[in-house]
Each structure stands twice: as structure tokens, then as C-alpha cells.
Length: 95
Length: 494
Image (cartoon, chains in turn green, blue):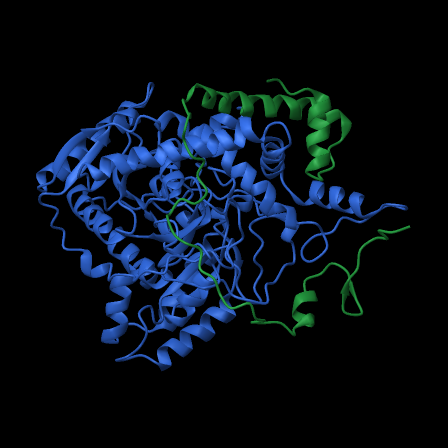
């Protein structure tokens, strides 16, 4: 499996990371080095093996479906790059 | 008189109890040492006001009934959220972030009376093995080769923690370990580092890298201190659904040094082609030391070892790509300045391009790729299946009666900063070849300094234990530590 510039562009887009056009070929090459390295997993016989979901066997615990915290909008917004009138502000999303 | 900052936690605890030293004196000594060690770049943010305030409070409550770590000054890895104090995982994208809350582990340390000296440098988002990917700049290892002046890596990602402990800029530090990030830097700095069983310490409030692998642990000057610090860090937390609801035993009480009859496994797959002779020799010596202490040495096989690193480099980036999706420039941290007409997608793309360093971008994108439609089964699901087999290898040897497994911690001593700059990323990944299996299997592992190479640089041996048996593991490490008698400290040049 070889990653070309077009695939690198697509992955960058999916990851929401702007990558300048001129850097895409080098990026594709790095992907190829890493994916070439993981390619050896193809040698392993995994027939009938369950994919791991949790490394320690445990049942996830449940809690009552009730509100346990909240009522602190100022704290929630205190680190926002742009907060206005109790909301996170972002560029216009809907035309 | 011994400088207070050079004390172990245990020695400082005793001195505090006897009244030979105050927490303020300990704290001031560490702050002074840290202030003079700017060249190491171990601390990213010092918090002297908080430190002295907590030290004074600790001194006021001294005496019977004082909590376990009362008055002991610690460094905290920048990955832990600390209330009101910068916590940015050494990334530009969390520039200016001051959490409104405290991570469970650091809260437990506060409750135990410990003093926070500041936040320690690390690889960005804990992704790296040399502490060169930090937005704060590289950390420099306090150790140098004999007669050399080249700057060496302290390892990563908990490189600031390791350097600070080795150079006595704190009594002990917290670290986190996703593929070796506690044990590898401990080995390269002549310090002790323990990664607990997955689920032993709460992950709540620790900036997430790969959630199924991340685990916090102690980085200390010796094994006893690792037991003491782990005791305070461990325990069930309802805020982390993977935190184990099981009792935490008394780890320090487990340190008897008696390992007679224990079975130590030596895995043949860890003997790598091209492994430096010094590592091989150290491993053999470790085996002899444990044998002399009364343990039974047994050759074992962990057949899927060679697939651990490739498995890790699918699973960890996949989880990172999901975890790091939260850095979008909306709720916290950095937002790129936008051009006319830029919409929300451009905001995400520019913010993440500016905020993430190269290695982080690379891993997020690799993770995105292996999770994308058409490749999910071939990469991600296959890696999860191989992970099951890697864990099964360990389960098999433990079921056969092996109590602990002895391996080298790293394939080499500390290397020069910048040495990997031209190499492809996979070369750097190979640093974790002996440590990464432990994360994939969720096991506890500890690195103990056990010798030096021909340049006088420290080397570590790793012991891997059964799940939840950190006490037994620490005791075996204690026996190894006593036999190895490693007491060297880096000669001060900074």
C-alpha cells in the first residue's frame, strides 16, 4: 500500500489540519515509512482472534442517570478564545 | 549537611517527622536548585507561590496524623491539569489554558500534603522519546558522557520529570506512560520509573493521548520512593470509567527484599539483533543478581513481541486522532487568526496547523488514515487482534508460574539531542521496543538503574509484573536495586 500526494491531501482534510500543497509529497513519504513499518502485522495469523476492546477485564460501572454537576458557565467559558454573552463564538456556520 | 533537595521522599519524610528540616526549607532548596538549572529546561512553569503556600500549610500541620506526603515537594508533568496553573501538554495549541479543575492524581497528591513546585517539560502531547517535540524546547539530560560536552536526551516523553529527579530539582515527580514514557526516561537518567497496571491510577484530568494505553506513575530517586508515591497516586475514581475499583495494598510494606523462590522469566525475543554488548551484559548481570538473591530464573517465550511496536503505531495514533479532535480552537487554547471569509472549517484547519507540532500532526493523520473507511479493518481491527495475542503471550507465562519478567529498559544509553533529526520517524519509535509491550498488555512495569555504559551513562533494567501486583513487582525491583547498588549522580555542569 503506497500513499500518494492525493491520499495525503485527503487525510489532512479529514484530520482538519491545513497542509500547504508543497509539503504534501514529503508527508506522503512519511506516511509510507510508518505504514510500511506496520505492514508486518499482515504476517500474523489472527483467525478467530477477538479484537481487544479493553485491556483489563472489567464491567464498566453504571451510575444513576441524574445531573451531578453544572451551573458554572463562567468557568466553562473561561478558557475560550472567543466567548460572548454566555456562548462560545465561532465564525458564521449557516448562510 | 546534605542539601535538602537531594533527599529521597523517604529520607525527607523522616527528617520532617524528626523536625530536622521544614517543608519550607525543602521547598526553597528545590526551587533554588531548579532556578539554577535553567540550562536543563526541565521545568516549563515554576509555581513558587503555590509551593511556598502549601509548604507553610504543611509545616503548620506537622506531627502525628499528618498525611502521607506532608510537606514533600514534587514536580508535576505538564500533562496533568492543575487548577489555575498552565497545563498545556507542551503544546502550542493549549497556549494560555488554565484548567478550572485539578486532575484526580494531583488532587490526591495535594490531599496527601505534597507541595507542587511547578509543571515539568515533556514531549508534545506525550508523543516522543527524546523530549525534542516540546513547544517549550528540548530538555537536556543532566548526565554527560565522561569527558564529553555533547548535550544528551533525557528520553521522553516524561523527560522533564526524569531530568528534574536526576538533578535534584524536586524530590520526586509524576510521569505518564503510553509506550514507555516513564520507564525509558528513567533508564536514561539513572532514576526509577514505574508504570502501574492500567486502571490503577485515574486518568481523569490528564490530557489524553491514547486512552487505552495511558497510565500515570511515579518517577523517583529509588524504589522505596516509587512505592510511597504510587500509594498516594493510586485508587479508584468514579470520574474514570476504566479506573479499577479494587483495594490498593500497602506498597511500601511489600518491600522486604526477600525474593527467594520467585520465578523470573527471561524472554528470548528481547534479545535483538545489533543490541549493544553493554545492554546484553547488563541484562546478564541483572539475571545473576536476581538469581543470587534466591530467585529462580527461567527462559520464556513471548512470541508476538516483534509485532508490539507496529501494533502500537496503529492503535496509539488511532486513539490520538480521536482524542485530539477536541482541539478545535473553540473551547480552550489557541485559535488561529482568520482571513476574510474564512468559515468554521478553515478555523479548525488553520488552528490545528498552527497549534500542533510536526510529530503530533503526523500521528493524528496516521490515526485518521488507519481509521478511515476501507482501512479500518486492515489496520485498526487487525492491530487490536494482534494486541489480544500480545496480551495472551503474557497471560500464558504468568499462568505457568512466572512472577516477573526481566528485560533491558532501552536498546541504548542516552543519545545526543538532534541525533534523530534526519532519521525517519520509525527510527525514533524503536526506542520503545522493550517497553511498549507492557502498555499493550496493561501490565505494571518498572525501570531500575542498574549500571553504566563505557561512557559512564546510566542504563536501566525493566521488570514486568502480573496485573495489580505492583507490590510484588516493587519488591523484586527493590532486591534488584540493592544488588545493583547504583548510586552515581550526574556531575553538575549546569
